[in-house]
Length: 220
Length: 100
Image 1 (cartoon, rainbow over the protein chains, first blue to last red):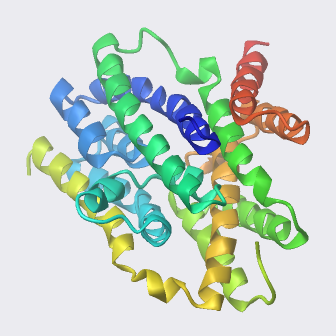
Image 2 (cartoon, rainbow over the protein chains, first blue to last red):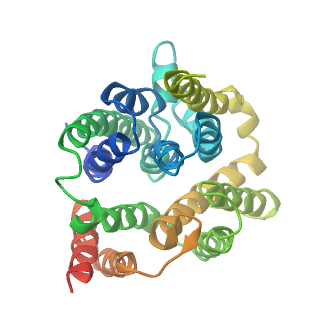
Image 3 (cartoon, rainbow over the protein chains, first blue to last red):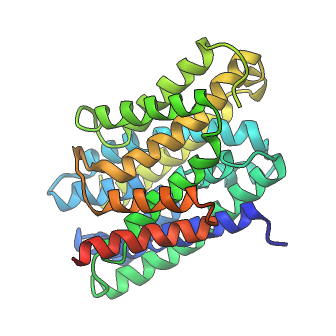
């Protein structure tokens, strides 16, 4: 049965997965061979870190600096891992699989759901859907090169913006969450020029957690 | 180290980072204060992801077609459009602004 969370998860998966085309094309252009590009999508599987990795190589950097940039950019996934573990409490073989699928989009789809079953469906449909499409599209992009052009031409970056706002929107039903959202968006924008990519989200996470921890009253 | 060596090491580090979050015992997060912090974190992360995807261009800030996507999505959400339509309108708005 297709529940609202699954529908959201699959929409997010399509919007995100298609970006794999551009990763595949850029990976080959950065000097990696086909198998290496595919390995990054299958094993690293966190888009921002992957783009950082090949970005450093394309800029003439070595493996060590590519490693550093990608790893720093992935630190926020630990925050998602914490939330996924708390909300879904996966057991057995699902634990490492859930960990591998902990990225921006799957975590965002999960936390945007109110019902625990929908949180679970949202996480897995977004996570598995993106994993499948991301890897297929990486292969397509690596083989086709940049024949398809920049994915921004098709408005895919706009789709990502709309998807994250769509996930945030239902949460903005009271004054305090609106204030938290504004504060965190501002903190993010201020942090972008000051710290490496990926870290602004961590700054916002600290602001939000501190607000919640030291605030009073119910917070929905 | 070889290109493959760094790729495998960076992939292992990525997985270890994700898995590290699973080592925080969920019961630590059950106290009332921690619950409040987690609820605030949810809103904060979604707001931050929205802001980064709208305004960040690497380490620079940019106002471009993505702002049109944000506004189109906000209007669609105000009119209670379904999620998929919101995403499509966001893509369409960004693509149209780039076209002209």
